[in-house]
Amino acid sequence: MAGESGEPEACTPEPGSFAMDVRDGRVGRVMGRVGPYVQLRPPGGGPEWDCPPDAVRAAPPGLVLRARVTEVNREGQLPR
View (tube, helix red, strand yellow):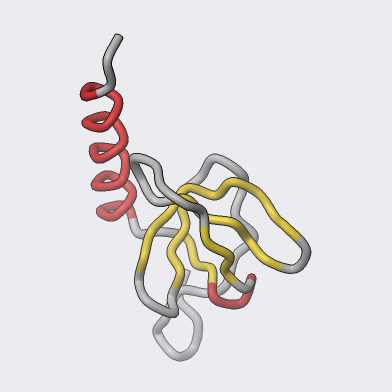
């Protein structure tokens, strides 16, 4: 849902969902909260980063699809 400025409104994402950090456009899987921050992890793994709650938006469907494909591809490359 867009606010008056045309940007998506801030949200409180559920752990496991994908969200976007509007400060730089990165998309990550929501890992939880630490203090006042939402922790996001890049699709496919990597270090988590802290995002202020007012900078978190629901990731658009196209970016969610791209993130899921990245995760599936990463899982397929792991040794069994």
